[in-house]
Length: 472
Ligand SMILES: *Cc1c(COP(=O)(O)O)cnc(C)c1O
Image 1 (cartoon, helix red, strand yellow):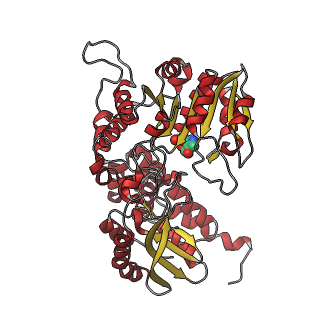
Image 2: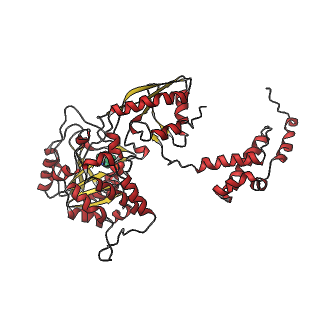
């Protein structure tokens, strides 16, 4: 249609503008009353004003549809639902990465959720001793449990493992040297790089050895009266293979203790149990790291441990006490809700036989491929029907990852749904999946959208959510 740019063409617009309802007319229309009930007068008025402004702009641009009060209320309602929807709403993690850092890592056990919920709305004896009515210690609620589960003398808890490493280095090596192997200068992602953490902690990084080989003599040669700590870092998210050499922890402990310097072992994921019992590959346990002579061991709460975000530090009592005296500890402490969830999670470890049933993360990690493939065969026709022509849906074998840097080279055989489509349809589908009331997040691989079903727990909810799908 040829575009008329003459002034006369714009004449009808003001007539239409006069037909737009006023804000107060919409507000007093019966169609607005559910908006007022649900969102309140302020938010409803703002949304109606915004819808009217858009309608006015559209008319001035040459449009000729004038929404009535009913339509304005409906548009405002949709707007409020949209902005009111949380981006933190639950989603289906079908990426194949179980401990997905961007998707919130571990899923809590029912016991941990119940404990957190109970602590949320009521006062609790967080720093209050119920026996003598005096002031108590926040860490006491989990200290004994951590010692019991790791064999350590004492323990403390901070916000996450990055905070644990920061606090340890700041306490033991501020203004002093921290010795670490060049093969262990890790970057975890999200700006956690060991050299940067060292700098922020005020410690001087002393690198020893080479990327692939570090010997006992390298550590010994770097020791000076300025040495505050020897740090061993679990290279969780990569492996150095081939012509390699690292100094085993017991030997390193001997070197450190020979000169009265503490050995700190940052285990990263850290696990409290032998994972081979659950069909996974063995990772060094925290108990082993303690037994091998580390003076302090740090590890995460929301990786393989399967709890909320937290950083645990276990080890020698005098060192834990020094950490607790550091003013930085106050800035890194955890709140009552998380402590309640941590305590409940740790207690599950007293009964290892039922751990895989109770800890969702462990349950997902140990799900057999056959069971997942069966689920994929059930769901493939359902998905195919929802997607209709233009997409093909097949059952596929795929590999899940543990995630969060744990066991990076050990994938878990899994199964899923592979969706194929022509042109840009696949990325449009992935985008449509993300707009659902419970978004579905998969991964695009080799021109297919793969939905790895390892982490699909609620099949009925998945089917109900698929029914919402509106393809562009
Ligand atoms: C994950 C990890 C960290 C950081 O732990 P967060 O709990 O994510 O803060 C530190 N060191 C290692 C070796 C890790 O694997």
